[in-house]
Length: 88
Image (cartoon, rainbow, N blue to C red; front, side):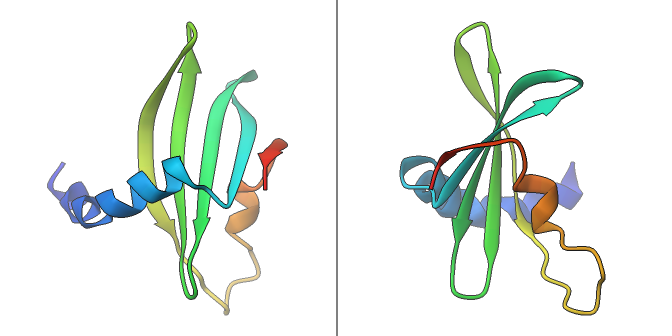
């Protein structure tokens, strides 16, 4: 778990992204549509907050910065910008 301790510095971003996200995507995990992906765009960073919907409750599962690698052929934002766009 120590390798995840750096994420505590993003707690303010988590609060901002949940209260005022730039995009929210409803998507599936394991063939069940039960994930919400909140995206918050900043000038030079994109943060993703993953929540799970279960039994009528939403629980926070993970949060992280989506790395921007201009040298990569793979656009990592597409991994999280999928499903049904429910807020823009």
